[in-house]
Length: 188
Ligand code: GRF
Image 1 (tube, rainbow, N blue to C red):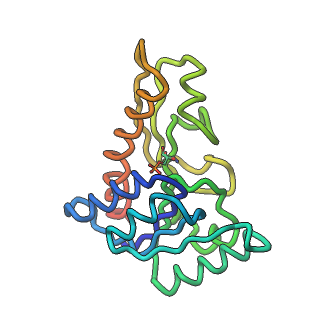
Image 2: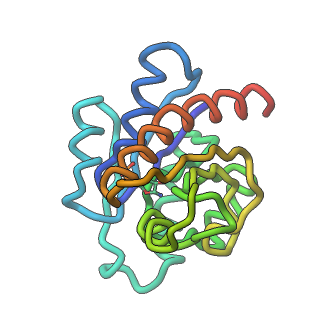
Image 3: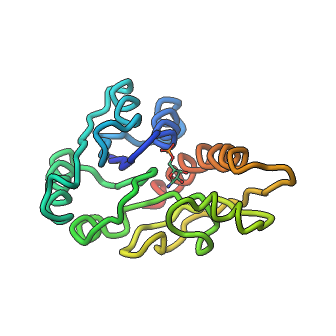
């Protein structure tokens, strides 16, 4: 499958997908990285992998429709089949949702529907629950609300700090995202 990865920050999930492709365990190609920040580390990672990037500043556009229309033009030109969200900190608007219906996937660091939105790891940590986890789901017009594809539980252990929990969750994400995508692409 031909993928575009959307990210806003560090890009460790982008890296896990790129590595799985190089290792031959994920049968896909990342055609494009889309990033809404011009200084995000994910852009450097993409350059190191020789993957094309499109970075933009939302402030320079009149509306979401305008920048998503520009992105859609590039996705069509590159014949992208799936949009993979990996730490993209914006809601996807109707332009991309309609064009890629059931072909936009997100990873979220909690057991949805618990702790949607920002800082899900901190929310779970502060709530003193015994376990949290990772959810991979299709994207709809809500905030972390689309149909769930896969979930994995991550324990919160006595003595954990938020940082330790974050590392445990991210390790889970990095193992999980490529393998869930591989299963999904085999079905579609
Ligand atoms: C991940 O924890 C992901 O679940 C969330 O944002 C984080 C992105 O991390 N949506 P990275 O940029 O992939 O390192």
